[in-house]
Length: 143
Image (tube, rainbow, N blue to C red; front, side, top):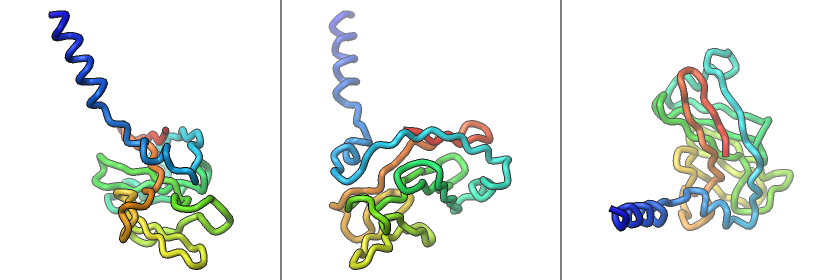
């Protein structure tokens, strides 16, 4: 029984994968403290009641956060700073549909806001992701 317990703990420890590993290795980004609650009954968060809608939040993250409703049960929250260069005056991305685009001159970086991946070059750093969990009528966003 003791061997089984030790084996089980070992398997659990080595099989756990931290989704943030890619972002932790990104030399351009910091890991700002993010902790917010979005009450979906409030009018300013109403767009998040409908799948396919997103909302920009300027108060937290590096350059703000985009929250996207996938299916009323799954939400994603991503930082709006372009993860493939140092944050600067033009690195806050704009959103069109499900794509985030960097407005910096000579930049063609586009990311899918559902996956966070670069649209044409998946080997580049993905957008910085935060936890987004819905509990009742409240979405909690944190890191």
